[in-house]
Amino acid sequence: MFPIKNLFSILAILLFALSVNIVLNTERTYDRNHYLLQYDMAGYYSFLPAIFIQDDLSFQFLEKEGFDIYQFVKKIPNQTQLNKYSVGPSILLSPFFLGEHYLGKKGGGNGLGMNYLHSILLGVIFYVSLGFFFLRMVLLHYFKDWVVAVTILSIGLGTNLLYYTAVDGIMSHSFSFFLYSVLLWSTWSWIQNGNKRALPLLGITLGLITCTRTANLIIGLIPLLWGIKNFSDIRERTQLILHDKRQIVIAFLFFLIGFFPQILYFKLATGNYWVNVYFDEGFFFSQPLTHRFMFSFRNGWLIYSPIMLFSLLGFYVVWKKYRDAFWPIFLFFLLNVYILSSWWCWWYVGYGMRTMVESSALLSIPLAASISYFLHHKFIRWFFIPLFALMLTLNFVQTHQYIKGIIPWDGMNWETYKIVFGYTDPMEQEVYIQRNLEMNKNVRLNTGKAIKDKEYRWEYCK
Image (tube, rainbow, N blue to C red; front, side):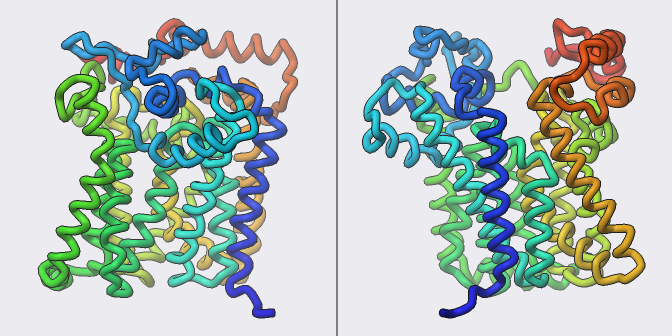
């Protein structure tokens, strides 16, 4: 038998998939179809039964089955009812949905039963795991196999990607993580290996990224800037684009193919090729709440995915040793955080700044650089290893707390965080009461908006 090359990183991906299945089963995600068909997840998923079974793009069939659609179906200014969420996740999940519909043991159905959602959740695990395989191919170009393995486990088990794969998997973020990983690999394959055949994949992936979450189009900076170390490289990049212009035109056509389903939906539903479904929501670009976005106990990214602090430290190592990857990832990170923290709902209701889940695919390079650096230095290693293990454990505990409602979906602050720190289910009633009393000081529960935000964003977008 031939030995499997770079086995540790493959085992890390398998361990991640196994861990997701354990969480799925212990938290009984499989049995909660009413939960999975609410809010954003209902919006992303409902295109599948609406198109393939119900023939109802008004989504009234959901109301007939007892589901609320007001959370995601909006009346836009011309009074047309429109699903505010993008079709990208449904496109990716369609093979699993149709496989269950036509080949499943029960066969047929209305598209809302747990047999469909079992297949959909399997699809989520498939795409995130496949994303790690694409990520692995890029990381192995820069780092040793064991470093890549630790990096995969850090992202898969040490960040909120675990939650958005095992629990709220039908949200857009798990699919965006997969697509970011594919785009990173196709970019690297084109720029580093000169593989022009990767350009159509790059194009359709960028189209699907936009079709999944429009604001994520800024990831186009990655193929545009990859490999540029200084100003003189800009001329070389221009020459490369001109040399490969035929393939780039083809890539653009594939981008349009990837984005076309969203345009088609708007056209069928409204008669227009593009509609701003967030017409009553918007950005405050002059007031980005970056400090809260990163460090607030109200879903702050580094509070609930603290292991990613190492990725920020790793930018120094990437600058020193892997300059070809530095500028595209660093500039994307800065611009992405600025845009995301400018959104009116800067805390993005959910667990631990969910909009950063997909960015972990790109930040895997500085994270791996940081891990490699710390573990190769004898004295630093003995501080890094226990700190790393502590951060990994903290993510498991906090993920469990959020699933059980110990950490609520909104309203956390430093005082409430201290009250519930370390508690697991079941938590004493007295602690719940104490937590809620503290939250009431900070949150208007009927709106979910913190009172102290009034000086920044209290008024709803007008």
